[in-house]
Length: 169
Image 1 (cartoon, rainbow, N blue to C red):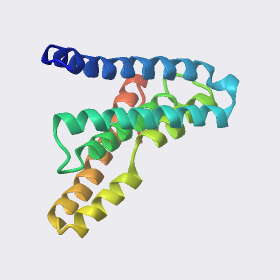
Image 2 (cartoon, helix red, strand yellow; image 1 turned 60 degrees about the vertical axis):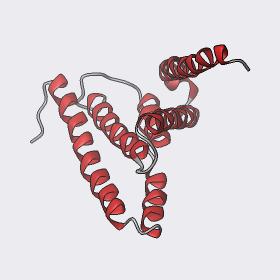
Image 3 (cartoon, rainbow, N blue to C red; image 1 turned 45 degrees about the vertical axis):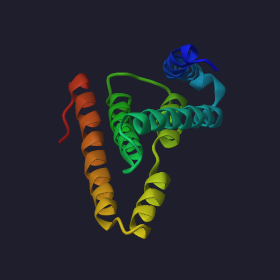
C-alpha cells in the first residue's frame, strides 16, 4: 500500500460512520412506522438490534475522540438513553402531545433504549476499575452515572412536558 492511499482510507472510515448513522436512522424510522403492524415482539427485537448497533457506533466514536482509560462511552450512552426514554415516554404517554401505538412505544422504550443503554457494561467496567485498584475512578463512574442519568431522564421528561403544556402535580 502506498502512502498516497492512506488519506483516502482514513476518509473512508469517517464515511463509514456517517453511513452507519444514516442507515441506523433510516432503519429506525421504517421500523417505527411499521411497529404497530409487525407486533410487539418483532418491534422490540428490531429496536433492540438497532439500539445495540447505536451503542456500538457511539462507543467507537467516543473511544476515538476521548480514549478508553475511563468508560466515557458507556457513561455517555447511559445519559443519552436516559434522556431519550424520559423525553419519549413523557411526550407519547397518555397525557402526551404525540399519540403513538403501544408497539411503537415498546419499540423505542424497551427495544431501542434497552438495546442502547448499557447497565451491564457499566457494572462490569466498574468492577474492572475496582479490581485494578481504581477505586476513585469506580466511585466517579458510579456517582456520575447515577446523577447524570437521573438529570437526563428528568430533562427529557421536563422538555416533553413543556411541549405538551402539562405540568406535574
